[in-house]
Every structure is written in C-alpha cells, then in structure tokens.
Image (cartoon, rainbow, N blue to C red; front, side):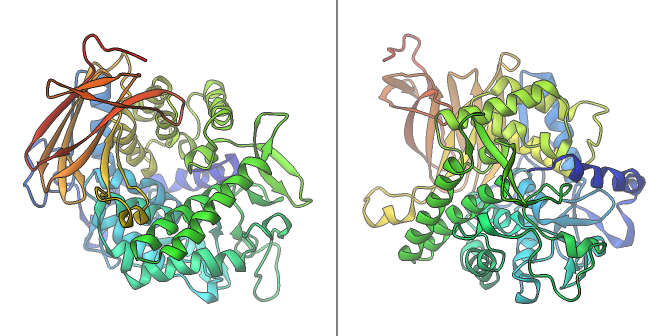
Length: 529
C-alpha cells in the first residue's frame, strides 16, 4: 500500500509516456476479458460469467462510482496470453503485474469473478522464488510470463521491495478464504514459496527480530558493486518507500511480515501441522508486539516510519500498520487512524497508490463518511491517474468489504479438534452506510462455492440471500448494543461486543440454506444495555 512521493514520482514520469499506449490493449492477439463487464443479467448457479456482480442502490453517486470501477477494472483483465489469465497490476502500458499491486488488487478481482486470474498470477510469483535471487521472486511479470525488463536484468540485478514476499503470502491466504481453492494450501509451488518466505527469505535478508534492527541497507550484493547501477541499489529495498535511500527497515515491512506469519500459521493448521501453526502464530504475535512497543513513539503518539542507516528512527507512519492489521486495538490503532485522517484533511486528493486503499482502512476502523468521500474522489471524472489499475480494483473491493461490510472469516483451524460445532469459514456482514446512501444491495457475489446477495437498509437491517451453492454460516452484525435482534421477524438473543474501532456491535449467527433469504434487523423498540 505504501507509495511515498519518491516512489510515486518514478511511476508518474513513466506513466506520462506510457498512457498513450493504454488504448491499444488489443494488440498481439490478446482477448479482453470484459465482454460482460457492464451486464446486469442474471447469473447461473454454478459458473457465473466474469463481471456479473451487481450493485443496486438509492444513491446515484455510489451507483456511478461502482459502475465506473467495475467497467474500468474488467478492461484490464485478459486471457489467451502465454502467461495465462491475468489482469494488469502495474503501470498502464507495461502489460504486466507486480507483486505489490496484485496483492492489493486481489480482493477487487475476487468480487469481479477474476479469482482464476489471481490464482494464476500469485502462483507465477510463487513458482519463481529461487536461491539465486536470494529467495526473491520476479517483482513484475509481463504477459509473456517473463520478468518485466524494466525491473529485471538477471538474477543478480533486479528491482525488489522486500515487503513483496510477505504481501503475496498474505494475499494467498485471503484468497483461499474467499475461494476455498485448495491449490493455495497444497500446491507444491505455493507450499515451497510459503516455507521459503518465512524461513530462508527472512534469514537471508536479516528480517528476524534478532537481526532486523542491526541490518544493513545493501545486502546480498553479487559481483562488483556499482552505486550507479539501479538494480544493485534497489535489489532488496527494505520497505515500499522506493525514493529514499537512507533507511534499513520500514514499519510497513514489519507490518507485512506480521500479516505473512499470521497467514502462514493458518495455512499450516489447514495442512494439519498444528505445531508449526503454533510456532508461527507466536512469531506473528512477537512481531506485532515489537511494532507496538519498539516502533511506537510515545511522545508523538504515533508509529515510527523507518529506521535510518544510523539506526535512528525517522518520521511517522500509522497507515501501513492499520492496513496489515498490526496495530493493537485501542489507543494505538486510534492514534494511527487519527494520523491518516489528518493526512486526508491536509490532502483530500492524494497520490492514488496511497489513496486507493484508504477507504478499506477507514471502513474497517469506523470512519465511513471519510471512506465514502475518498471513494467519490477516486471515481470522479477527471481524477488524475485514475487509469492506474489499483484504483478501480480497490474501489470495487472497498464498496463490497467496507460499505457493504461483507467478509469471509475463519476461526483458528485447531478449534476443529475441540468444538463440535466448528465450521471452517463463515460470511460476516456489518453495514457502514452513510446519510448519502439509504440502501444498497449487492447481487451475484462469489463466495467459495456460493453466489450470495446482501442488502443493507440504513445500518439497521440486513437481508442475506444464498443465491446458489450449499448452505453456509452467516454472522450478521449490526451497529449498537441490543439484547435481541429480529431474525425473519422473530426475536433472537444477540451477542454484544466491540469492534476494532471500539464501536458496540450486536450479532447473531445463522445457517442460510441454498436458495434461502434471511432478514436480520434491529427491533423498533430495542432495549440497549
């Protein structure tokens, strides 16, 4: 997610030239994957066409933003190339996808029915990890299935941001949750990538907690060092800040490492190795504690951004800690959120690499009004660099997971050894509509073997339809503290708890059969406690 100004300037300079190529996307026999991108037609029970997700709403601005984002994102999806099914996740005109952008676009791609594309692209990264590249992969792969020449010369000379392996591992686990595709769990290419990333990669680049604070900026140099060679000085950038050269580790790298260890723990449990799952759950906890203690500036009330080459902390950055879920709940996550809100207030229309993921974070931490404003800014006509693929994919993803509040979640797999009522995953909903949106409804959303529909009316009523697929578990949550909720008109005891932002929520957990529709709402005269 991180894309400081120097990183952005590199992309902006290139994009000024490359933008002229965007309209020529049908060259060399490529087949666009967007024939149905604007269709509002129904969807078959077993295999919906790409782009059949629908949004109906009382809010014309929201409808227009979603329609634009869906149409734009699907225009970047292709099939028939040597690399296989893919979508653009790099500068327009490069005909390529990079590790960072795929990791961050994969949620929007899932919503749009592009799960096979994401699987193919993530596997391409996994399959190309190697010892000769010090357990890195190819930072960017083009439609020919080759490393993009702009970022790769040979295994000793290439561009690489070190959060990339961690980002991809985290994305693989998240995509497993949404798709249920066991290739993410047991395909040898993925398993090797996961194992190497959490062990050999961490060791080779001194990213474990015993060494990360003492590491050097430049590591694993092969051949005679040339400070003018961009690949040698950029082979192992210790964060997503590609502009500054004076730091040895960024907090975004550590936050991404936390997310990767957390995801790896879950994957190992799914593979039946509960001992490894426990080890890496503890490692994730240790990294999170490290970020929230060593990297916390008590005086400023914010997280440090980087450790410089003199091993002194510089700057502040709470956004990445929030994005990867590494901030402790309570005052520290609130302080990081305030940091983000202040940045948006100072620059409401910021660089797209940064802003494209603000809505997701803002919805998650209870700021729906600001999140909605950011979506409107990203989707407005004439928005500078709006054509950058990450923008449209992120808008789609944020509307579904943020405004509509739809998530696929999983309890720890080892609970299956203890709980008679254990289920591997459930669909969670929590509305975050603002005064601009009286109601909104999503249809044909792919969730594992199902297609589901969700309608949010205000923040007081949710209708869930299991359009196709087997019965599933729905965790229906609504804002506020309520002793009971109405389930299809029947009073049902609710569970009350606080969410990440400290808001009180009330929920019920239900089974929704194939083809069934269930309505959960707040009673007209709810008793609050």
